[in-house]
Image (cartoon, one colour):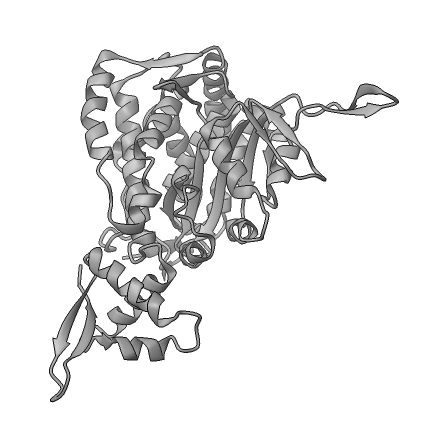
Length: 433
């Protein structure tokens, strides 16, 4: 049961909270123990007892922060493409009280000591525009003055940028505005392009060798609603690791001071950062390469519907996670343990995607039809009834027909002919999972 016992000295109070973990919750993912490996695992172990933040949220906050703090020097090469340790993550809370921000604050306390310069200069909040992202790490700007090319803005020397977006729904809304470049710039940043620039006339910013990482916060319901509006299946979404998170425990008076964790962990983080920044190309040990051959096959299996679009970069995401795990260990090679830890994180994120988006196919009309069919699971609905249901929307009969065919193709709906005494009526129903 989701019960926390509160000690009032002379009596105990048991409080029910739907945000607390419950092992028999259907569909809620459970992280494999391999994910808590090495330094990342120690961070979670030290912080978890004294915070309400989800353990997976703490883990991802640390992995993303560490990768960005290291910088762009170490990489893993795949067919000529360099994968740097920059990760994008979305923490999807079961409710608004999932303590997503708490996980960020707890991990940030460690880096404030381990690398105060990075924390002070490279961590930013708010994804308002693509130009705004580039401006914070812009190259020097030169303009012609009196016939000579002069530097009018020295730019920003440190190209590391850790975006801490606490209101991700607003960022998704921004992307729907005509001409907004957020989606393209974020995709280019994840891809590790050597140059990213804005073509906007009023803000011609350009960045060379950017190192951008993102952790975003949103509720599961907001994310589901935003999916239709922002068409996240266009290649933008699969660059993110989506993780379901919720409150881990109730601490009415807050957790104990993190001084002990900071004292113990920050020297280890400092050493790991110093070693990682000396690395360049990271390779795999023979044992890891053998394991990767097996993992690669399973990661390459396509998922149905929208899940396929959102998890399309499973192989690349797992490799990047393994790279970060290796760097936290100070290793110059990805070993079996790093791959196993990375796969554990990816499997959790994959299960989260199924929980969040399992009822959607990426087509707004088809998604609405599927919800309607499931609400009428016993009787089903005819095309005429569906048209009446959507008469106040912009969905035309042709779009409804196309949506039905898509659901039928995906095995989510079926049509049957019902006798009426006259011409048979086509009745559609949802197929139970």
